[in-house]
Length: 255
Image (tube, rainbow, N blue to C red; front, side, top):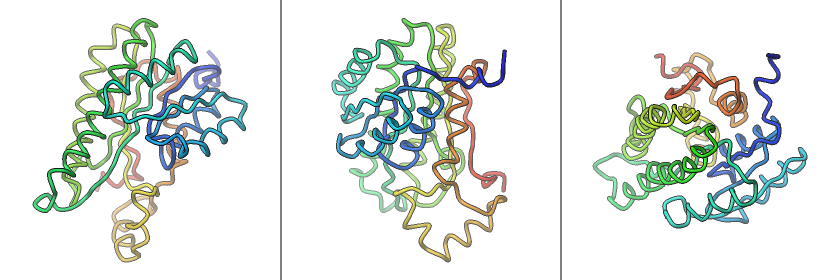
């Protein structure tokens, strides 16, 4: 088989949550460049217009389906709408997430509940709804967004780290259960990437300098750095990889 065919996603259908900006937007655009048509989800339809327009410039179809991933009924509506529009779902990128970072002894329960609800429960609900379609298809790729904070501890990441660690475990169990149906489930664990969530930290010169001194690549990630990895995990090239968490952090977690 030719190498380029291993990464060809022509006319595949991908659903990306949290697709309005940052990592979600970058991954959606990368999938479009590889050939996918996209269903884009975020809480607000207006926030997805820019992502949709960029995808359409590549000649791919982009459908905006807004909705809250923590609402099970709404998640079912989202997935049904995608299936009705395209007739199938080949790829799910479970990316929706929030931060709410502070030291655990200062963390309000409301913030704990919010982070766990969006990052962990939202990932579960979306995966559950999409899986029903993929099982009937006997094929599919599910890509979950974890974090290096889910692998090793970090200050002010109590709720976020707990949720992202849960996604790693969820990914492993799903891979075991869905493998017989031809579905691969993997997660991505980014280190520090430039996004709206991290831009204040990156703007702190002293904090950033101290961080970069511990990163072998001596830089933080840009959303586009995820492009090759998400295409690989969505494509035939990764058909024998499942249940894995792939760290992309410039080597930060090695030290």
